[in-house]
Image (cartoon, rainbow, N blue to C red; front, side, top):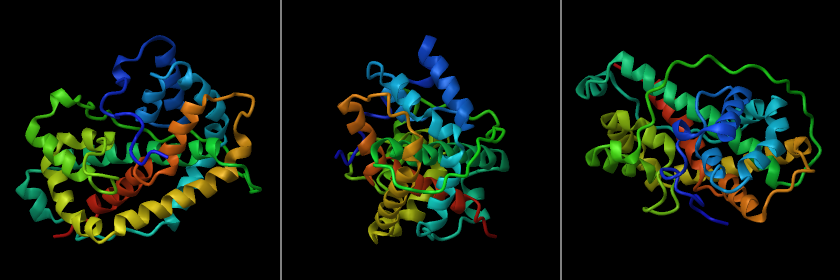
Length: 275
């Protein structure tokens, strides 16, 4: 199993560049999942022949069941919390991070937490054997989202900011050269905030707490995926290469699970502001 993404999240199709049937599928994914953006796994699948359509057809019923949202909540509530030093008003003042920027950063983090987290548990249902479990969900419309800051391409991010993006990308990553996850690239609008996060979370990285939490989330997601596996379309056959990509995506701690771990920890941290 690949420990790093089987694709480069910074090099796959940008959502803004999608057209025709691909754009239509992206729109349906956003509607069903209740998200304002399509994360890299779907954009990567769009570059693998018919993998996007087949994977979405196979998994759409899982998302439409409403189960992934509740499964994600159980995963986050059960996983060990990452506790860091609180963010202070003095720190925010020193980096000129006002309320407007804080609201925007929170919205970006929340969007990825919902999308990455629901993908983690729902796509785990495609690669795990079904087990008996109670399914009681019902699809509900997603939350209202503000207009998010644009996701900058690598060439649009100054090198100084990119170095900070690479610093925070090491959290939970399988190696120092791991592919940069899209959440970090989207947060490059606020490199000084990322620098504060780098300092705050570094002790948890060096002490192994991030790796422990991420490994736990992988196990919880696999259990939730197996419980929802009966909802997948078994008549849709996925190419072995696509199954390998999906298996690595949901099964490796160094892929989306680390971003689910870090994204929810970031949300708590950015809401922990103290005087």
